[in-house]
Image (tube, rainbow, N blue to C red; front, side, top):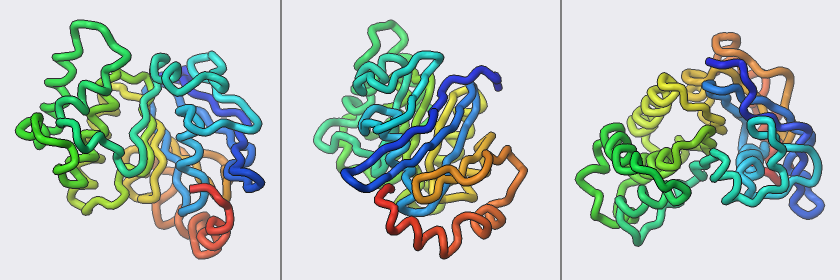
Length: 250
C-alpha cells in the first residue's frame, strides 16, 4: 500500500436546505488502501460519497483527488478522472441486459482492453456469465450487487466508492461480495467504503472513520486497533442512533 494520498476531503459541509447533513468532514484515502466510513442511519454516509462523486454540492470545504481540486467538477468529469461509484440499492438498468449494463460502465473508455476486462469481471462473478443476455431486472439482489460492482470496475477506476454494499442482502451473499472486495484490495484497488455492517467493514479496511450526526468522531482507527463490538459500544449505541434520526443525512 502506498502512502500517496489519492483522495483528500477537507472540512466538507453539505446542507439540504436549512438542515446540515455534513459538518466539517475531513478524511484521506491513500493509494491502494480500503478506507471504511461507518455510522448509524442518518449519520451522513451516503451524502459523503454522493458529494465526492459530484451528485451533491458541498456548501463549504474541498474535495481533492490526486492533487487536483475537483469540488466544482460535474460528475462525468470525476468519472473521467478515475472515480467510480456503486450506489446504495445497486441502481442497475433493469430493462437492459446484463451485458449492456457492464458495457455501460466503460463509456469513458476507448481502448482494446475493454473486452478482456469484461472477461475478468465474469470470472470474478461467474453467476453473471450465464445471464449476460437477460434483463438486469430479473436478477436477484445479490446478483444485481455483483453487476453493480462489475459495472463500476469496467471503468478501470482509480478510486471505487461503495455505498452500503451489504444493504438488503442475505449473509451468505454479503460474504461473497466482501470476498470479492478483499480480492480487489489484494490487487491494489483503492476503495472508500461506507457501511453499517461494522464487522464486515473492519474485516477488509485498512483504516476506519466513524461518522456520527454529520461529523467525524475522533481519529481514524487503523486495522486491528478496535473491534466491531468496541466500536459499536463506544460510538454507535442507542444515543448515536437517536441523534442520527434528527441529523437529516443518510
